[in-house]
Length: 167
Image 1: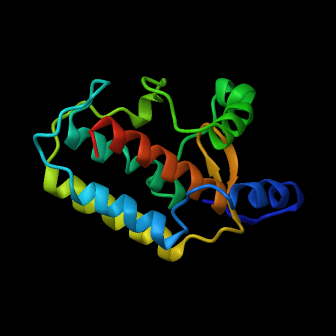
Image 2 (image 1 turned 135 degrees about the horizontal axis):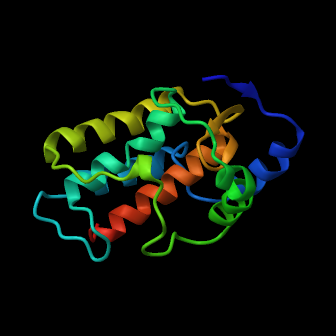
Image 3 (image 1 turned 180 degrees about the horizontal axis):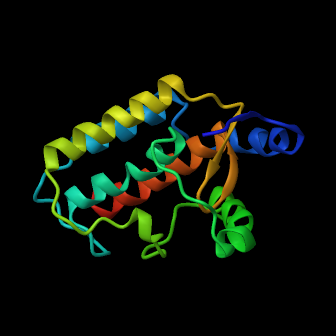
């Protein structure tokens, strides 16, 4: 995945993001990991269709894009609406329930709970230890995002799904 150093317009946005919870904060990332650790295979969703194992697998997908392990061209909808949606997702509060999910992010098959839990925690630790806030990476829907934007959206995404399962 081609990465580039953050340029002008990202600087102002990144300064605004510095007041939000994100995975670059050791406190925030450890809180998320502790919440994941508290999940049990019997946790039921308060909304949505995924079971807890599927949710853990689903939450790994954005990290796999960040690390270049998955690739997807931006479709017309992403090109037209991705930047606007990114700004809305970054600056509004917590994600609302039952947001639409991209097909590539949907997990419908049965998954091993312990394996998915371990892999998600490993991906979070990998992100927090290797991601650079100044590097810009391509998101399949939102387009170019700085490391800071990835860190905020990843936190908000994880928080959304952990609230979905009551932790």
